[in-house]
Image 1: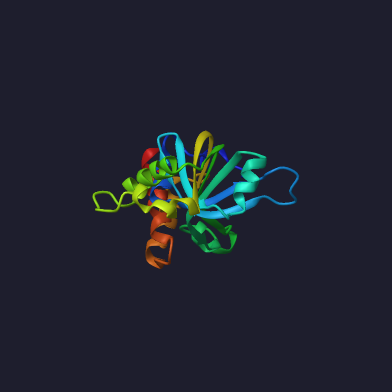
Image 2: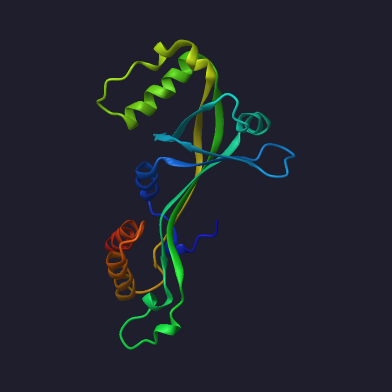
Length: 204
């Protein structure tokens, strides 16, 4: 994806966003394929690794066997910004340029396929620790034969590309006006987008 300097994620900004979403698209290009394999999946980021489990029948495993370099793409907190929202005061509303605010993170790395039951159970334990903290659950290793129906994956993150497109190319007054209008409209995604606008302003 193309990232302007003012939209680029800063520091661990991507980690907070990814942790709050936890669902994305795993992309494996394989070798000699017309199109990559794309799988929607839940995931957990632990340190500098992505942890995932999928059914053994999932077609992405064949693509990973061909080429273990993969991408995990996570996007969200999007909101359409009408043209007249981009103007304030005496500025002609028709001169505003409509856009879409959104956040998107691409994690690149090498997939390590895990087939043994102990390794799969270890990944599942780590996922449950994030997704169901403090909850009594049966240890994954006790599911026995059911573990053979899935494979786990660890992806060591080698590169992060993050974009937070929330009006960073305009001044604070224009951005805050858009944030207020997002609050007033209160459609799905509007509150999250407004929070990003204000958070990024306070951090700049």
